[in-house]
Image 1 (cartoon, rainbow, N blue to C red):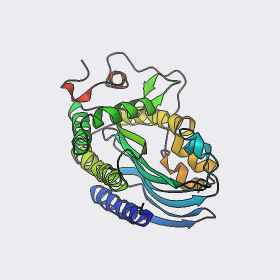
Image 2: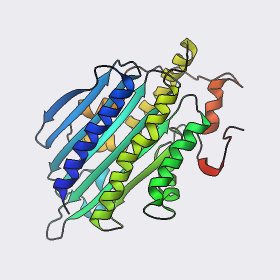
Image 3: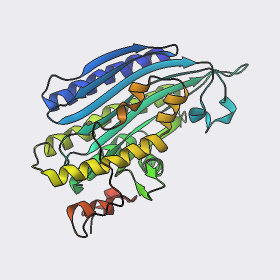
Length: 304
């Protein structure tokens, strides 16, 4: 177990993601905010009011604590209360143009140190896509990229992690998925440390391969007030998921993490409307057909 190699790679990944997204945006780029707390340290990098990204945040953190929070130990009750170490990069990108989807990615490493027992380690992460006006070819590219990186490690891995993503990023109170999914994994220690670390690196770096071509293709699509209002309304679902269901948000708050960095995932602007119903047959109503799990690689079109 080489935690130093993990944290060094995570910081390199943060820099690479920020550099590539800043190049897409063409503005001054990300502002770095270094922080320290009783638990550890981190770097929050934020691009605000860009030409392409209304707000983009990419966080790195490395913390240690005396008692593993409930959000992290729920799946491993034997480790409840054990000292722990956690490091990760987490990002959420909120584009300005409603035709560019919101995206999220996260890669993380945990180690727990139970008393009178050997340390226990695992990796987690994934990426998912939240379009407002879906394009079938974009979704196909997103999922094909995910499958390709999974296939390099194990047959059937993509299907497993895709299903996990569909199940995790699900708004139970709305009976809909947050978007069109991607990959999600946690408690990854099924292989040796180096292989698990290699897969986590593939996911973190694969996010750019999946997302940047979509941004480049859709960033100049014309839009008006109608599309903007719908985007702001649908951003409300993102707020609902992150505050009600997201384990990462819960873990950060339960562990005493830096609140500004934890809640950086929320969109800068959002609109809530009571009992909103899109007009039947409208482009806005079309989104509903995409908010249920399906085999995206089975072929086009998806919306018939």
